[in-house]
Length: 319
Picture 1: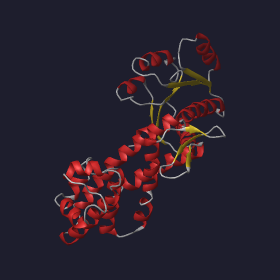
Picture 2: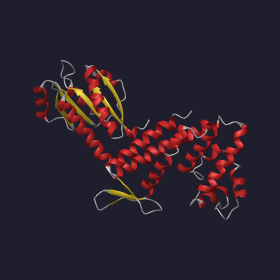
Picture 3: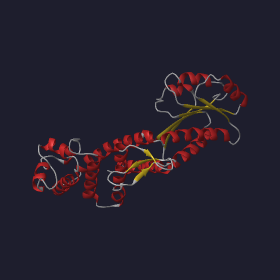
Picture 4: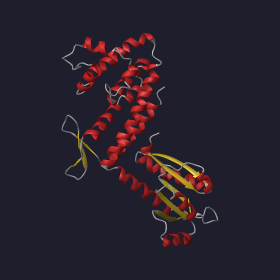
Protein backbone atom coordinates (compact mmCIF):
# COMPACT_ATOMS: atom_id res chain seq x y z
CA UNK A 1 0.00 0.00 0.00
CA UNK A 2 1.28 3.45 -0.92
CA UNK A 3 0.90 5.08 2.48
CA UNK A 4 2.53 8.34 1.37
CA UNK A 5 -0.09 8.68 -1.37
CA UNK A 6 -3.05 7.56 0.71
CA UNK A 7 -5.27 10.05 2.52
CA UNK A 8 -7.00 8.33 5.43
CA UNK A 9 -10.39 9.60 6.61
CA UNK A 10 -12.41 8.41 9.59
CA UNK A 11 -16.06 9.51 9.83
CA UNK A 12 -17.89 9.36 13.18
CA UNK A 13 -21.57 9.53 12.30
CA UNK A 14 -24.61 7.26 12.61
CA UNK A 15 -26.00 8.32 9.22
CA UNK A 16 -24.57 6.07 6.43
CA UNK A 17 -26.06 8.25 3.67
CA UNK A 18 -24.17 11.31 4.85
CA UNK A 19 -21.03 9.22 5.09
CA UNK A 20 -21.30 8.09 1.45
CA UNK A 21 -21.91 11.68 0.37
CA UNK A 22 -18.81 12.99 2.14
CA UNK A 23 -16.60 10.15 0.89
CA UNK A 24 -17.65 10.62 -2.72
CA UNK A 25 -16.74 14.32 -2.54
CA UNK A 26 -13.38 13.60 -0.91
CA UNK A 27 -12.49 10.79 -3.31
CA UNK A 28 -13.20 12.95 -6.37
CA UNK A 29 -11.07 15.77 -4.97
CA UNK A 30 -8.15 13.47 -4.11
CA UNK A 31 -8.26 11.67 -7.45
CA UNK A 32 -7.87 15.00 -9.26
CA UNK A 33 -4.67 15.57 -7.27
CA UNK A 34 -3.14 12.11 -7.63
CA UNK A 35 -4.01 10.66 -4.22
CA UNK A 36 -5.73 7.50 -3.03
CA UNK A 37 -8.39 7.42 -0.32
CA UNK A 38 -8.75 5.04 2.59
CA UNK A 39 -11.85 5.53 4.72
CA UNK A 40 -14.07 4.03 7.40
CA UNK A 41 -17.13 4.96 9.46
CA UNK A 42 -17.93 4.38 13.12
CA UNK A 43 -21.13 5.05 15.00
CA UNK A 44 -19.84 4.87 18.55
CA UNK A 45 -16.75 6.07 20.37
CA UNK A 46 -16.16 2.57 21.70
CA UNK A 47 -15.68 1.30 18.13
CA UNK A 48 -12.96 3.85 17.65
CA UNK A 49 -11.10 2.56 20.68
CA UNK A 50 -11.12 -0.96 19.28
CA UNK A 51 -9.44 -0.04 16.00
CA UNK A 52 -6.06 1.33 15.02
CA UNK A 53 -6.10 5.05 14.31
CA UNK A 54 -2.53 5.40 13.12
CA UNK A 55 -1.88 7.65 10.13
CA UNK A 56 -5.38 9.16 10.06
CA UNK A 57 -5.30 12.43 8.09
CA UNK A 58 -8.81 13.68 8.82
CA UNK A 59 -11.58 12.94 11.30
CA UNK A 60 -15.10 14.04 10.35
CA UNK A 61 -17.21 13.99 13.49
CA UNK A 62 -20.88 14.61 14.19
CA UNK A 63 -20.64 16.89 17.22
CA UNK A 64 -23.54 15.27 19.03
CA UNK A 65 -23.29 11.65 17.90
CA UNK A 66 -27.08 11.57 17.55
CA UNK A 67 -28.63 13.14 20.67
CA UNK A 68 -25.60 13.25 22.97
CA UNK A 69 -22.84 15.81 22.87
CA UNK A 70 -19.81 13.51 22.81
CA UNK A 71 -17.55 15.88 20.96
CA UNK A 72 -15.43 16.88 23.97
CA UNK A 73 -15.07 13.24 24.99
CA UNK A 74 -13.88 12.36 21.49
CA UNK A 75 -11.32 15.17 21.45
CA UNK A 76 -9.80 14.08 24.74
CA UNK A 77 -9.57 10.50 23.50
CA UNK A 78 -7.99 11.31 20.15
CA UNK A 79 -5.57 13.93 21.48
CA UNK A 80 -4.08 11.36 23.86
CA UNK A 81 -2.21 9.84 20.93
CA UNK A 82 -2.72 11.89 17.76
CA UNK A 83 -2.56 15.41 16.47
CA UNK A 84 -4.33 15.55 13.13
CA UNK A 85 -7.11 17.51 11.44
CA UNK A 86 -10.55 17.17 13.02
CA UNK A 87 -13.73 18.66 11.60
CA UNK A 88 -16.78 18.80 13.87
CA UNK A 89 -20.13 19.43 12.23
CA UNK A 90 -23.72 19.66 13.38
CA UNK A 91 -27.12 20.85 12.17
CA UNK A 92 -27.43 22.53 15.58
CA UNK A 93 -25.90 25.91 14.79
CA UNK A 94 -26.03 26.95 18.46
CA UNK A 95 -23.91 23.96 19.45
CA UNK A 96 -21.34 24.82 16.77
CA UNK A 97 -21.21 28.47 17.80
CA UNK A 98 -20.84 27.49 21.45
CA UNK A 99 -18.02 25.05 20.66
CA UNK A 100 -16.23 27.63 18.53
CA UNK A 101 -16.51 30.30 21.20
CA UNK A 102 -14.97 28.12 23.90
CA UNK A 103 -11.70 27.97 21.97
CA UNK A 104 -10.61 24.93 23.96
CA UNK A 105 -10.09 22.55 21.06
CA UNK A 106 -6.73 23.34 19.49
CA UNK A 107 -6.47 22.42 15.81
CA UNK A 108 -10.19 21.60 15.51
CA UNK A 109 -12.43 22.94 12.74
CA UNK A 110 -16.19 23.43 12.90
CA UNK A 111 -18.94 23.55 10.29
CA UNK A 112 -22.70 23.93 10.35
CA UNK A 113 -24.52 21.17 8.48
CA UNK A 114 -27.21 22.81 6.39
CA UNK A 115 -29.48 21.10 3.88
CA UNK A 116 -26.82 21.09 1.14
CA UNK A 117 -23.89 20.58 3.52
CA UNK A 118 -22.10 23.43 1.75
CA UNK A 119 -20.06 24.61 4.74
CA UNK A 120 -18.88 21.07 5.52
CA UNK A 121 -17.81 20.51 1.91
CA UNK A 122 -16.05 23.86 1.86
CA UNK A 123 -14.11 23.05 5.04
CA UNK A 124 -13.14 19.60 3.74
CA UNK A 125 -11.88 21.12 0.50
CA UNK A 126 -9.84 23.67 2.44
CA UNK A 127 -8.21 20.95 4.54
CA UNK A 128 -7.34 18.86 1.49
CA UNK A 129 -6.00 21.92 -0.33
CA UNK A 130 -3.77 22.61 2.67
CA UNK A 131 -2.39 19.08 2.49
CA UNK A 132 -1.84 19.35 -1.28
CA UNK A 133 -0.02 22.67 -0.95
CA UNK A 134 2.39 21.13 1.57
CA UNK A 135 2.87 18.10 -0.69
CA UNK A 136 3.88 20.14 -3.74
CA UNK A 137 7.04 21.59 -2.18
CA UNK A 138 10.51 20.37 -3.28
CA UNK A 139 11.22 18.77 0.10
CA UNK A 140 7.90 16.92 0.24
CA UNK A 141 8.07 15.88 -3.42
CA UNK A 142 11.59 14.54 -3.00
CA UNK A 143 10.60 12.53 0.06
CA UNK A 144 7.47 11.23 -1.64
CA UNK A 145 9.20 10.09 -4.82
CA UNK A 146 12.18 8.51 -3.03
CA UNK A 147 9.96 6.78 -0.47
CA UNK A 148 7.48 5.40 -2.98
CA UNK A 149 10.18 4.24 -5.40
CA UNK A 150 11.93 2.47 -2.50
CA UNK A 151 8.66 0.65 -1.85
CA UNK A 152 8.39 -0.20 -5.54
CA UNK A 153 12.00 -1.45 -5.56
CA UNK A 154 11.01 -4.15 -3.09
CA UNK A 155 7.97 -5.09 -5.14
CA UNK A 156 10.12 -5.32 -8.29
CA UNK A 157 12.50 -7.73 -6.54
CA UNK A 158 9.61 -9.83 -5.24
CA UNK A 159 8.14 -10.05 -8.74
CA UNK A 160 11.50 -11.07 -10.23
CA UNK A 161 11.61 -14.00 -7.79
CA UNK A 162 7.98 -14.86 -8.60
CA UNK A 163 8.67 -14.91 -12.34
CA UNK A 164 12.00 -16.74 -12.06
CA UNK A 165 10.18 -19.61 -10.38
CA UNK A 166 8.14 -19.99 -13.58
CA UNK A 167 11.11 -20.04 -15.97
CA UNK A 168 11.70 -23.40 -17.63
CA UNK A 169 15.17 -24.99 -17.79
CA UNK A 170 15.18 -24.33 -21.54
CA UNK A 171 14.60 -20.60 -20.94
CA UNK A 172 17.06 -20.25 -18.08
CA UNK A 173 20.34 -20.12 -20.00
CA UNK A 174 19.18 -17.47 -22.48
CA UNK A 175 17.66 -15.36 -19.71
CA UNK A 176 20.86 -15.50 -17.66
CA UNK A 177 22.90 -14.49 -20.70
CA UNK A 178 20.50 -11.62 -21.47
CA UNK A 179 20.55 -10.36 -17.89
CA UNK A 180 24.33 -10.68 -17.72
CA UNK A 181 24.62 -8.57 -20.85
CA UNK A 182 22.22 -6.08 -19.29
CA UNK A 183 24.51 -5.68 -16.27
CA UNK A 184 27.54 -5.40 -18.51
CA UNK A 185 25.97 -2.65 -20.62
CA UNK A 186 24.53 -0.60 -17.76
CA UNK A 187 27.02 -0.45 -14.89
CA UNK A 188 28.27 2.99 -16.00
CA UNK A 189 30.03 4.73 -13.11
CA UNK A 190 29.82 1.77 -10.74
CA UNK A 191 33.17 0.27 -11.73
CA UNK A 192 34.55 0.68 -8.19
CA UNK A 193 31.60 -1.23 -6.77
CA UNK A 194 32.07 -3.93 -9.35
CA UNK A 195 35.81 -4.15 -8.69
CA UNK A 196 35.07 -4.64 -5.00
CA UNK A 197 32.38 -7.22 -5.68
CA UNK A 198 34.19 -9.31 -8.28
CA UNK A 199 37.77 -8.41 -7.47
CA UNK A 200 38.38 -6.92 -10.93
CA UNK A 201 37.39 -3.93 -13.02
CA UNK A 202 34.33 -4.45 -15.19
CA UNK A 203 34.69 -1.50 -17.49
CA UNK A 204 33.55 -1.78 -21.08
CA UNK A 205 36.59 -1.75 -23.36
CA UNK A 206 39.00 -2.81 -20.59
CA UNK A 207 37.59 -6.26 -19.91
CA UNK A 208 36.37 -8.60 -22.58
CA UNK A 209 32.74 -9.66 -22.61
CA UNK A 210 33.69 -13.30 -22.15
CA UNK A 211 35.47 -12.49 -18.88
CA UNK A 212 32.54 -10.41 -17.67
CA UNK A 213 30.12 -13.16 -18.53
CA UNK A 214 32.22 -15.79 -16.79
CA UNK A 215 32.22 -13.83 -13.53
CA UNK A 216 28.54 -12.85 -13.62
CA UNK A 217 27.40 -16.37 -14.40
CA UNK A 218 28.85 -17.54 -11.11
CA UNK A 219 25.75 -15.99 -9.54
CA UNK A 220 22.07 -16.71 -10.03
CA UNK A 221 19.87 -13.82 -11.15
CA UNK A 222 17.99 -14.09 -7.85
CA UNK A 223 21.27 -13.46 -6.00
CA UNK A 224 22.31 -10.50 -8.14
CA UNK A 225 19.04 -8.57 -7.77
CA UNK A 226 19.35 -8.73 -3.98
CA UNK A 227 22.97 -7.58 -3.82
CA UNK A 228 23.25 -3.80 -3.51
CA UNK A 229 26.96 -3.99 -4.28
CA UNK A 230 26.22 -4.95 -7.88
CA UNK A 231 22.72 -3.73 -8.70
CA UNK A 232 20.32 -0.82 -8.33
CA UNK A 233 16.69 0.14 -9.06
CA UNK A 234 17.31 0.63 -12.77
CA UNK A 235 19.10 -2.68 -13.30
CA UNK A 236 16.56 -4.63 -11.27
CA UNK A 237 13.68 -3.18 -13.23
CA UNK A 238 15.38 -4.10 -16.50
CA UNK A 239 15.83 -7.64 -15.18
CA UNK A 240 12.12 -7.71 -14.34
CA UNK A 241 11.25 -6.58 -17.87
CA UNK A 242 13.53 -9.17 -19.43
CA UNK A 243 12.13 -11.95 -17.23
CA UNK A 244 8.56 -10.86 -17.91
CA UNK A 245 9.26 -10.78 -21.66
CA UNK A 246 10.71 -14.30 -21.52
CA UNK A 247 7.43 -15.62 -20.11
CA UNK A 248 4.82 -13.37 -21.73
CA UNK A 249 6.42 -11.63 -24.69
CA UNK A 250 5.93 -7.93 -25.29
CA UNK A 251 2.24 -7.86 -24.42
CA UNK A 252 0.14 -4.83 -23.37
CA UNK A 253 1.39 -4.94 -19.77
CA UNK A 254 5.00 -5.06 -20.94
CA UNK A 255 4.51 -2.08 -23.24
CA UNK A 256 3.06 -0.02 -20.37
CA UNK A 257 5.40 -0.92 -17.53
CA UNK A 258 8.52 -0.46 -19.68
CA UNK A 259 7.94 3.30 -19.30
CA UNK A 260 8.50 2.98 -15.55
CA UNK A 261 12.11 3.71 -16.45
CA UNK A 262 11.09 7.36 -16.97
CA UNK A 263 9.87 7.56 -13.38
CA UNK A 264 13.16 6.05 -12.23
CA UNK A 265 14.94 8.85 -14.12
CA UNK A 266 12.88 11.44 -12.23
CA UNK A 267 13.73 9.63 -9.01
CA UNK A 268 17.45 9.95 -9.76
CA UNK A 269 17.03 13.69 -10.35
CA UNK A 270 15.32 14.15 -6.97
CA UNK A 271 18.02 12.05 -5.29
CA UNK A 272 21.06 13.79 -6.75
CA UNK A 273 20.12 17.30 -7.88
CA UNK A 274 19.50 20.33 -5.70
CA UNK A 275 16.47 22.45 -6.55
CA UNK A 276 16.70 26.04 -7.75
CA UNK A 277 14.17 28.71 -8.67
CA UNK A 278 13.63 29.70 -12.29
CA UNK A 279 12.70 33.14 -13.63
CA UNK A 280 8.99 32.53 -12.99
CA UNK A 281 9.56 31.60 -9.34
CA UNK A 282 8.96 27.88 -9.82
CA UNK A 283 11.31 25.30 -8.39
CA UNK A 284 13.23 23.22 -10.91
CA UNK A 285 15.85 20.47 -11.01
CA UNK A 286 18.50 20.30 -13.73
CA UNK A 287 18.29 16.94 -15.46
CA UNK A 288 21.36 14.75 -15.27
CA UNK A 289 23.59 14.73 -18.38
CA UNK A 290 21.70 17.43 -20.31
CA UNK A 291 20.60 21.05 -20.06
CA UNK A 292 16.89 20.38 -19.63
CA UNK A 293 15.01 20.93 -16.38
CA UNK A 294 12.35 19.11 -14.41
CA UNK A 295 10.03 21.97 -13.40
CA UNK A 296 8.12 21.23 -10.21
CA UNK A 297 4.78 22.73 -11.23
CA UNK A 298 1.53 21.64 -9.60
CA UNK A 299 0.80 19.71 -12.80
CA UNK A 300 4.14 17.90 -12.59
CA UNK A 301 3.47 16.95 -8.96
CA UNK A 302 0.11 15.44 -9.96
CA UNK A 303 1.75 13.63 -12.88
CA UNK A 304 4.39 12.13 -10.57
CA UNK A 305 1.80 10.93 -8.06
CA UNK A 306 -0.42 9.41 -10.77
CA UNK A 307 2.57 7.66 -12.34
CA UNK A 308 3.58 6.13 -9.01
CA UNK A 309 0.04 4.87 -8.43
CA UNK A 310 -0.20 3.46 -11.98
CA UNK A 311 3.09 1.56 -11.90
CA UNK A 312 2.55 0.38 -8.34
CA UNK A 313 -0.69 -1.30 -9.41
CA UNK A 314 0.65 -2.74 -12.68
CA UNK A 315 3.80 -4.17 -11.15
CA UNK A 316 1.98 -5.45 -8.06
CA UNK A 317 -0.51 -7.28 -10.31
CA UNK A 318 2.20 -9.26 -12.11
CA UNK A 319 1.70 -12.96 -11.38
